Image (cartoon, rainbow, N blue to C red; front, side, top):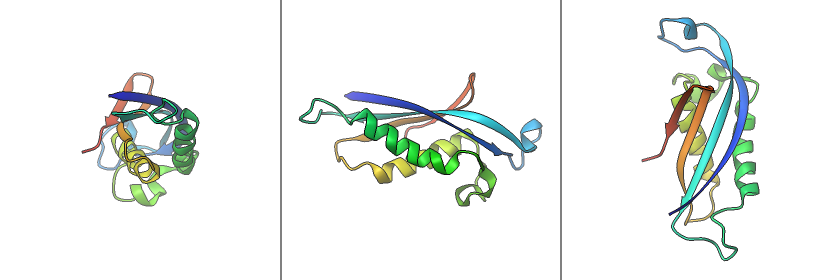
Length: 123
């Protein structure tokens, strides 16, 4: 199995509903995101997917989150904008953009701090 990973980041504000502690108050993070794609085979060019194309896909998804108030976005009106739910959001939006049948999302990881990360690997 081959895997390729790209990294990016975005900044946004949020608060957590039904949470007792500091995170129930409005606050912001500079989130870091990694996206890993896997494939059993390489293209005729000898790659899983072009890094440039993968970074572009991730950038398009993160553009909707960057410098936003996450709680106001449709996807987070009912679901808390936790790192876990942000990872699922990114996974679903990247899945729609993947054109190769051979490529699958292996992992989306979202760091809200340098020491705290949540990942989603699909079903």
